[in-house]
Length: 402
Ligand code: SAH
Ligand code: SF4
Image (tube, rainbow, N blue to C red):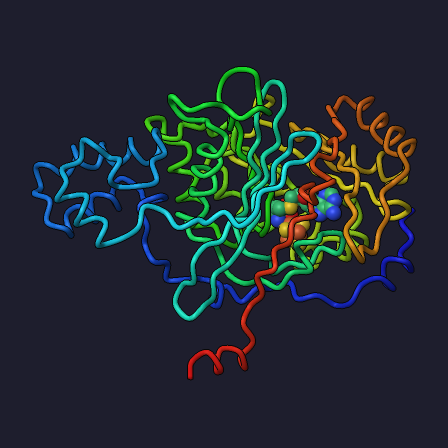
């Protein structure tokens, strides 16, 4: 049984409803992240004649998403006056790499800075690359900080700053491919899959709750999965949510990517504390949304993520309840050893306990890989991401306005 007294002492009341209006930015447009229609609009705006728009759009698409070029000057088959007019209108991209850390296990973490939008400040987000023999997974952020305050998550301790634009989400993928030499003719980085693409999978498991930035995430994934561009199959894209129930159906219907649910507890009184959005959308509603997820099948299972917290959610009674809870849902269970961070109010379960828990889940017929922590030495593991970007206080905003 979870030690509820312990849970209560450790946690203060949390906000569970973000004020989404304050999170949107009127993003400065940039070329990276643009859809074909948006590229066509930019081309029309600089006076490209209608009969050339489709051809120029295809050229830009190729340079941006297949070749990954950073500079309009390198788009050699685009007429010079078009390049010049575009350059005056908007940048190709806007990410600046502030830091790169490479773990002893080959995991890389990049701190990327995006410029200020409107009255805001520049923001920084983390993007993580996890190389394996057979694939390379890029863990992408969708927001700067997070409005939700899951009590075991480091990102949750960072104040929400703003949503990332579609361009900023796509740019994390383009940046990683460039940096890893995952482009035609480039030299591949040392760590990564031995063949195929260096970035073969994308997981929306970085900073932020992707379903509180649905439109931008959807637009970004449409670009990332386009077969003539970045070309990542939707079956290789996984969106992880803490359980924004009303939007889950739209992930399947409109984005058609794989779904992961941050479940982490099998009873409401425990989940209410660990994942406070549960107070708004309790477990029963979440399970209904999972059962109704469009396109669910044995080939397209839902992944249930379950962080192992010592004495909180790791009993064998919980393991059996977990199996009961997801009965009938084509599912995988991903047991995540808790990754600690300074001041974290939990400890990771003992290894024997994790194994005994996994055993029960396996015997019930569910694949339950224990996620090997990656990049812990560089603070890149699940839930350890946190950037220094902080929302401006009203006083700071006033000071900046004078
Ligand atoms: N906000 C989304 C996606 C980002 S978090 C979500 O919550 O699903 C990605 C995964 O890492 C989630 O399952 C999250 O619960 C888990 N996680 C967060 N903090 C963690 C920690 N300290 N140790 C292990 N996993 C953690
Ligand atoms: Fe936000 Fe996900 Fe962390 Fe919860 S686990 S605070 S939803 S990033």
